[in-house]
Length: 351
Image (cartoon, rainbow, N blue to C red; front, side, top):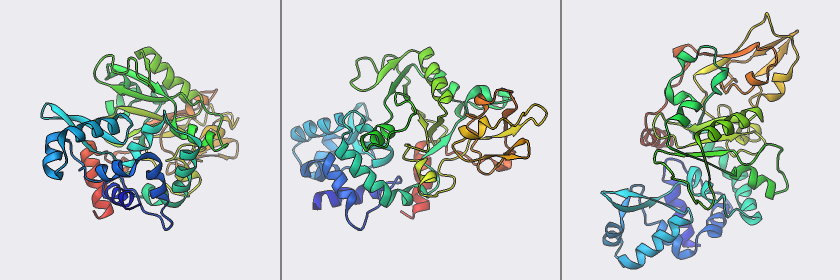
């Protein structure tokens, strides 16, 4: 298991983290995904893209064999491929968000169980570190003054900024279903985007969408009571997760592990119009964050627990609920880039 131990240490050295467990559950998880040789190779990659020639020169491995191995591993979502000085480069990919999510097409009952065992042992340590993996973005039509919304705060604007749209099964709901613990929420709502047209045509796992179909998917997710969440940076948002506390690996951190603020809140908070609230309590059932309660005959909002997702707003039949922008002093700054996010998280972890 030495090759898996080396890889686990390298993954834990990334800002995202991959904490060890007392009984080595993380090693069993890696052994399900990587051969010993692949684990050894992945452990020798860095967190920055390098060409095959650069990796070969640094490691002493044969470039031709290395190229074949790295391409095969990248196709299986075990490492990341990208451009480096106009050539193909490779780098180590975090386990979450990264390697694990790339296994949606190959997830089976064994992997589901191995991940669950690791989740129960180690995820609390990962999810308590700031900045959080994900931040909430609101359902657009739930904001009372849309002029206050900045592009990176808007699900619709994120969709509009892209040229390719796709949807795939949610790996979290797939994993829980394989354990016999599936929830009733739709599974085909994990959305991905790309700035290049036709990026998802003929993809084995991702179903390509039109712009209008992507917007319809957002609406369908919100109507199902799911929370829109994205990577926690201003730039570089290429996916929208639609999450629930029953299956989502991150929101389960709140529901099962007792972690507060497991997602970074949006810049908005719910507000009740007391004149037209009829006290029907329908909104309370839809809130994933337990931010709503009854105060006599009216709904009361806990502004600390409210993440500003807006899901409850579209389930309010009287229109009594709506999102308003928080005071600027209450809005946590969002890292500009994913690299900035990594620097902040690494500093928080002391690495």
